[in-house]
Each structure stands twice: as C-alpha cells, then as structure tokens.
Image (cartoon, rainbow, N blue to C red; front, side, top):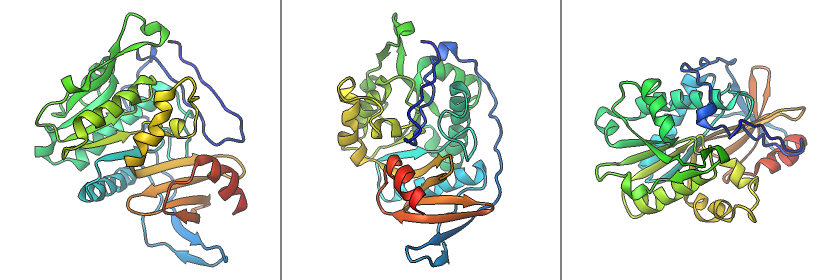
Length: 308
C-alpha cells in the first residue's frame, strides 16, 4: 500500500499521520536525537485572572525528562491496579504534531523510545515477563536488529502479511496463541498501521488481561483518530465501537498533544494529575485550563485555547 498523507479542515485540530506499509518504509536505525527545548516554568491562571505557581508535573524539557515522567506516572497507575493504560506523545519533537515527521521515521523514533522506556521502567526480573507487540512480523525483525538488539524482552506481533497485503489487507493473529502463562505485562507499540490492529489489541485485552492480574499499555497508538470519529462508524463499526467498549476502561497515564497556529498550545496529562491546557510563552508554560476528564481535541482547539 503506497505511503499517503491525508489532511482535514484547518478548523479541526487533529493532523492525520501517514499510514505506511512496512515493506515500503525506508527505515532509519537511529533516533533523530533527543531534542532539547527551553526549560518551561509552569504557571496557572485561574478564571478570575490570578496567577499561581503549580507544584505538580511541568511540561518536559526533553525526551529524557519525558521518559522519567512517563515512568513515574506508569508506576503510580500500576500501583493503583490500572490494567489498561495509554501513553501518547509526539516523537518528531516535543512541540510537533502527528504528521510533522515522515511516518517511518516517527515509528522508528517510537521504537527507540519504547526500548528506553522499558529499560527505565522494568526491573531485570520483570523484563522476561514482558511482551512487546509490534504491528506486524516485519517490525519485529527490524526491532531485533536495531533498537531491541540484545534485549531480553519478548517481541511479538499483532498481524502478519497476507497474499493481499498490497491492497491493505493483513491476517489477524489469534492472541490466545501468542500469550504465554508467565507473561505479566503487555506493551503494544504504535498500533495504527492498519485498522485491524486496534481490534486485535481489544482481543488481547479481552482474552489475556480481563479477569487476570496482567497489565496492558498502548504506546503511541494515535487513539485520537478513533476518539475524533476520523473513521466513519458506517464503514468501521467495530473500530468506532472501541470508544464505548474499550476506551472507558483505559487510563491515559501520560499524554501530550500540541496545537499549532495563532491559538497554539498543548493538552498535557501526567497521571494522577488533571488534564491541563497549556500555552507556551517564551520560557514560560502557562496553564490556562485544567479539568479531571479528558477534553476533546476539538473543544481545546475551538473553545479553550481561543478564549484564554
């Protein structure tokens, strides 16, 4: 399937990334670098205009700090017995939006960051009990030769190529055949190559996590495409239904989504803190709004940011 880029009207904040076929991706084995950005001092502005210094987690200065924040958030969520978790942040730069980078490079960046995240999160005895699922078998081969070379983590895949792969079809893998008794944690890497991948993730959660002590983390799955209705329910009823079946059981433990333009900013959350809408002004990061539940990207772009 040829690499393509899609856009949506500028009034909607979500950029749609390319959906590449791994056979056609020109892979880059090294991450583009952990880019630094100026240190942000986070303030909040209340509705009445008063300002106060926030004592909670600030917007990260670089990817090293981001990974430490995500690690701490995940540990807290695991301690609270959260079984289904989401981690989502841009990989083409901390101020980037989905689609800023070429699809293959973004996924290669995610792969490297997943390895670093696992290295800082997992103790040696937990490594062999953790299974990392990539979108397809070719991704596993690439991972073993690059970012995950020498790792004791179990690498697996959600789908495998079929005879009709060039037309966008892949063969789903039965999750019951992939999971082993000793597995304790599943980490699913960027499941957005193909619409079937998130359906397999839902199957994995239903068959291997529910009613067990296992945990599942979805890492950079671009789930906002499903939340926003990018996939029409008429054509993708099973995928659209995940917003009502799977997502309500999921805790977003770490999240960054940037908004560009005149009313730019960021939606940021680090568990167990609130969802915060930030505006970056020089070296200051101003929290202009916060709430306990996730606002929609449309609400942030069209209501919260313009009115601040």
